[in-house]
Length: 316
Image 1 (cartoon, rainbow, N blue to C red):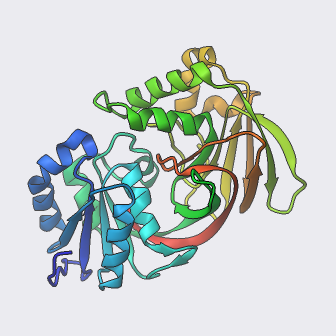
Image 2: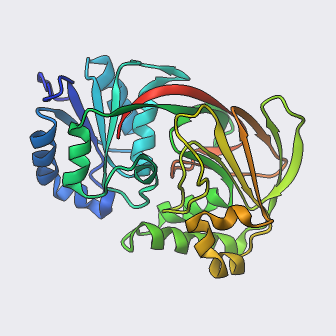
């Protein structure tokens, strides 16, 4: 990790966690220009490049322990998720006063849509220079890793299950040269060609458990997933509750013919959509149900998700 004072114009010691492969490798090739805009808006900073999955979490955690006060993630939703995980040890913030910021350079753009951070580099850096910060809720999940062990992670945007886990697997293994929306639409078509609704048992807070078939189930802190699908139009990231959206009975033809409603939020009016709100949700299934967490695919059910209220300061 480079050393230096790295004190920005707002008084924060600032560290950038940079995914050079984001944006089809454009971020790494053009980081000099990104750095110029950051320096002009925020002031001095240090940075580190991610080298492998999970490395952004390590870089973030090390930077916070070394006294950096604002961590800026440069990449896409997966990088943002890894950086947010570096702000926490389990469900406990590493430094409750530290600030999280983003420079969107990735494919999906789902977190930036909810936060209202512009995609344009110059405008995104201007947000980082501004005074506004919000204390956002964070989701904490314990789940089963692919190796069969109990694992835990946090997320700031959305955790989802069912076909969403297959979509993420397809998208992350394919080229994203067509951009976010097209990449996720192609991934969704491929996943829905082989997917059949899965049965899961839910318990929301202390209510009675119930079993439902799902095409997809999303536990939402933010509003968007899947490259711009407005899965939870009413979600607010600091209201102390998750918005839970369940889709059942959606087939490939429904996705093709009714995709507009998934993007404009009118799917909530469809009889196959169910909406709930809660602070804690427990999920289990006799089937292998994959997890999508902010665009990453870390494991499968069973899982328990708990909302941590106003746990992360975010520049937006």
